[in-house]
Length: 462
View 1 (cartoon, rainbow, N blue to C red):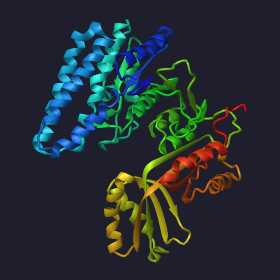
View 2 (view 1 turned 90 degrees about the vertical axis):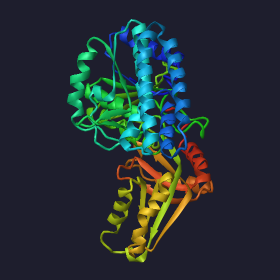
View 3 (view 1 turned 135 degrees about the vertical axis):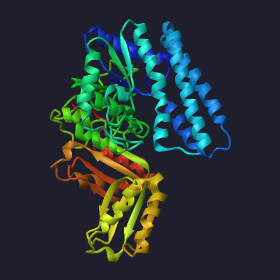
View 4 (view 1 turned 45 degrees about the vertical axis):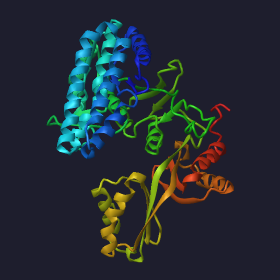
């Protein structure tokens, strides 16, 4: 069971978490728990670590540390009052470690990827002992572990590392014995390389941690507890009658999460899928709701389209030039240049003439992408690179689209009738996702039009 930042935001939220765990523990379920940092803490740590190397003074540290102390001690006193004298010194020690690291970053005027990983892990390092103590307060034995101690072994890429095959055996060896007597409380978002170097798994990486742990111990189920009732047909901030989907396939969830759905980390489904483990998404604040179940082979479903999502903060890069036609290695040169600068390409479309390649990337990477592609212009490999920030990417997802004729026509006819201009189209070979690009201001309208077109607000039996 993984509990996100809103689920552990304060003492009252943690009490709900312990209620849920206690209920399952009394039934005899073996439980492994993964916790995120409290809501907003990781953002604070990222912000200060980035700012310190160029800051004129270190006063931000003197503001942050007391703030974190007050928040976590208040949470501890409310969630586990009988363990304040035991856990309080641990929190204080970790805050002192964090302060020392931040002062070192300020003094050296340098933030290495390794140092940043260590700094931004402190949200979980401060919170996990409190959850462990809250379990002990209820009479449930717990063992608090960081991701490395739990057996999560990763690649050496700092900031967004990936679990490697050695994980399963190591997790089995470290977690299984604990499960027989206690509830392991594992700090999400982190792991280490085989050499023991600390790494993090990327933003929202606690989801990924939970799936890695679940696969490692051969769990029967992996549950993600959040602050919504499940995965919805679309963003409820855009579609006010969006509906919770009772069941989805692994493939559908991967497509939705990759294209901006906030409920799950894009990579979090892969370990579960590898071991064919059932996944549930449930609401900590409404635990009686059945939530969303994620499986490999879902029950027959008459729906062609299941859900819609869109990403606003993206940019289009159009690469043109007649000299690209029939020239071997052009695509390799483009994508190698972008990869060398860590620019992630989300969508690709190429004209049949070979004279145009269109890409969708994160808007924050646009300037870096332009720099990376500049040498191709000077070498005459491409003629021009045109940027466009005023775009949004929309994804239409549903395994029912596989082999269903006319789905694309229905999508683009509905958009045309609504006056939404489609600037770029991309469809993967899996056929479960049709993605397209529209003007940024048309993004919400495109989602509303298609939500109505495919009647996604209606219950399945209607």
